[in-house]
Image (cartoon, rainbow, N blue to C red; front, side):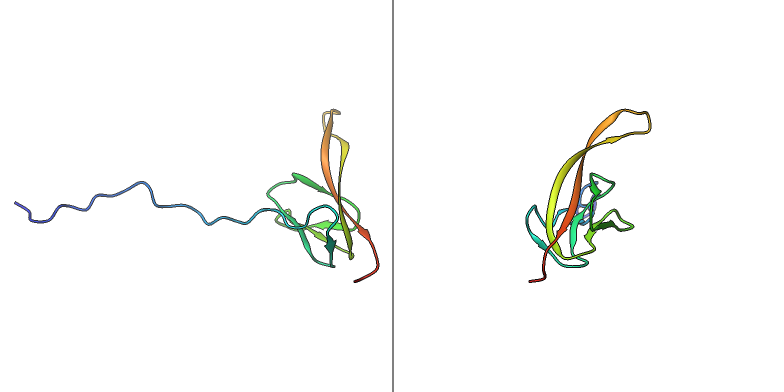
Length: 95
């Protein structure tokens, strides 16, 4: 007879690290050149004026200014309209 209980396996205990996605600068906040505005997977938010999209769909500022969130109707490939969120940076003088 064994004197030690056998160690069992578990299906739990494995989870990926959080990727810290989401809005980093909200509406009306000041953004410098290169500031990350939103980290996202896919295009939940779309590019507006003075904003560019990175390889991982991150939106970042191209000019300094105030962040502005708006909505806009975009035509999809099947000619239906979809309301999308658009992020822009409105240029102001540097602080």
